[in-house]
Each structure stands twice: as structure tokens, then as C-alpha cells.
Amino acid sequence: MAGRVLGVSAAATVLMAPLAGAEPDRIPNGPYVTPNQTVRIDSFMTYDELTSRLHRLDQRSDLLEVESIGVSGEGRDLWLAKVGDPSKTPVMIINQQHGDEPHGAEASLDIIRGLVSGVGSSILDELYVLVVPRVNVDGAEVQPETGVPERGNTDYDAPRLRSARGFFTTELGDLELWSYDVNRYHYATPEQSSFLNWKDSLSYDFDPVAWPENPVPEALAVLDTYFEYGPIWVVDVHNQGHHVVNPDPDDDPEFFRDGWRTTGGILWSLNENTHPAAIELSKQLAVTMKLASLQYGHMEITRYDSTSGFEGIARNAYSLYGTERIVNGEEGPLGGSLLVEIEGQTEGNLNSLLGQKRSGLLQQNVINLLWSVLGATADGSLFEVDAGLADTILVDDANDQNPHLDE
Ligand SMILES: [Zn+2]
Image (cartoon, rainbow, N blue to C red; front, side, top):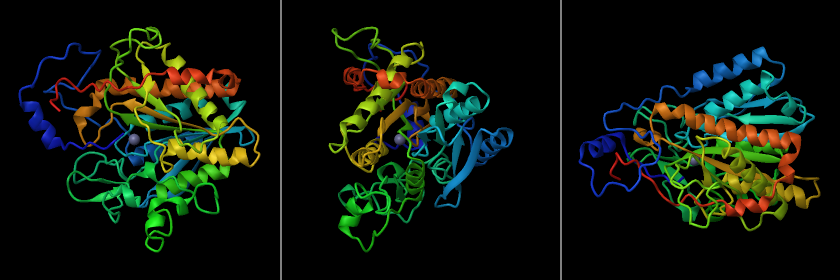
């Protein structure tokens, strides 16, 4: 999601101003944040809470192993939860690369709890489930300067945003403090991949002396995990802003429910070097999620609105690493990679969260989507899905702003 940062004080000013323009011709099923509502984010786990919950689960179950896969810039361990038998087929779920996008972390704790308590016993008969509940552990903390979590990784030695040099950074408030956008730095080491590594990055190309190595420890930890276990797919959970479904008259009304809120956007690799088999598996994940969403009244899935094939983005990167494995003769299916964007990110603006009343429902969206692909992978139905259906999934291009906010 592109960073559009609106400070809390600016939001408050907007809220007091009269609403400009005509009434929207329809107000989708909310609930939106209203002008007098206090938005709270204390229902989301702090790092300490995340750590203690993971370790409590670890102590209670032989099915789960929690380990540190790296250390963040501020010195926090990055946790990996490994569920099940390492001899089974590995799959991987990562969450909260952007610190202000919290629902995936919350949902994945629920998935881990379900798996170790027997809900997913048939899943663990087939799969080894690897979960990084929270990649950007530093950004996810409430930042003292802004009072909200931060998108970037809070390494303020980072250069300011300059995409032509490969500097993909994000500003804390409007404080001229820039830190790395973790989800632009999925460049392996040259030892890990000859197909895509840091030497292919714009920063290395710009100045190999100043930028000899990938500077983002959080991305490197995810990469290390990927190359150690070789999952057949990676699902990467984020949050996005607000959209409604806006189908054409000839679109299937049961597949796209006119006027419904989009609760999630999904997208696969758009990098032109991705192997067709990796694209196919990614689209099978997408279609599985879309079909699952139709079973629930509280979900509506569309295609995330991006055309970027940029290789540093996880959605593209992990299908490219899968492509390398396919080319090297590894037996498939593999190379699946899917972005999931759930509605309701904070984006430095508590009012874009839709409020804590909706938070549980959004979290439940992620839980349902993740169970759907875990179940389908385990029972093999994933590999029978018509990947071509993914191309019929509508783009969530109908931007729907909170009618209580004039922005
Ligand atoms: Zn994001």
C-alpha cells in the first residue's frame, strides 16, 4: 500500500471541518469511524505480549517450536513459529512487514493456536507450517514521536526516499526521519541465489561501496528462513485502505457483490521473469481464497490494485526464488507467492482503522483466508483449482473513503 501519511492532529482538524461535497450515493456496510469516536489500538499485541504468547504456546505443545531468526535494528528477536513435522511439505506465512498493518499478526497467532490444539490435525499430517507472526517488530511498536505504529523499520540511518537509487524508505510523521520499507528489500545474498540477489539491486548498482549488502535485517531474516526450509508457497499479509466492489453489469453478481466493502485485496507475482508454474500455484492460492470468501457474509475479496513487478517486493521475490528452484529441477508444485491486503491499516492515522469494533472481523477475514489455503494445500485440492479464474478477479479500484473524513 502506498504510504499516504496523515498525522493524528491533521486528522482531528479534518474531523471538525464540515463535510465537503455531496453525500456519497451509497454508504457501504460500515462501521466507519465516526467523528466522536475514540479509536483504540491497545487491542493489538505489543512485542512483549507477542513474545510471551508465542512462548507460552511453545511450552504447552510439542507440535510447536519458536525460535529467533534474526534481530531487528532496535535489538528485538524476530520470531519464527514452526508447527508440525519438519519432514512434511513446508509452507510459510509472513505478517506485518509494515509496522502499522497489524491484523495478520493477530490472525496468525490464532492459526498457530488452532494448529497446536488439534483443529488442523489433518493439515499437520501433510504440512510443516512456518509462521513469522510479525516481521517489522520495531515499527509495530507505538512510536513516541507520533503515538502510532510506523510503516518503516525505524532504522533512521536510512537515506530519504529515492527510488531511482533503490532507496525505498518511509518518513516518520513529517519529522524528516526515514527508515526502510521492509517490503522492498527481499534481496537474497549471492550465496543464497544467483538468480536474484543484492547485487541486482538499484542501490548496489548505484554505489556498491556504500551499499555492499542488503541493509534490512528483517528482510534478511525472512530470506534466511525461506532458503533454509524451502516452502512451496509464501503468503504475505498486509493491510490496505478502503474500497467497495464496483462490478460491470456483465460480471457475475455472485462472484462480485455490487456495493460490498472490499475486505481484502490479493495479488500474485507480476515480475516478467516468473516461471509459469510459479504463477499458476500463486493464482491457485488466490482463487482458493476468493472462493472461500464467498462462503462468508463478512468478506469480499478483490484484486489488489498494483502493476508492479519490482523484484524486492515479497509477492514478486518469492515467486522468483521459486522460479530458480524450478529451473534447477526441484520437483513442484512450488514457487507460490501471494500478497493479502486486509482492509483497515493505521497508516499513521488511527481513523483509517475503521475502529476497534471492526478489528475482530478483519482479523477473522485473515484467519478464514489462511485456513482456506492451508486446508486446500493439505488435502491437495489447491492443485486442482482452475488458476485461470484468478484473472477474472476484479481490481479494487473503486476507492472508498470514510464518509466521515474529507480527504
Ligand atoms: Zn503493507
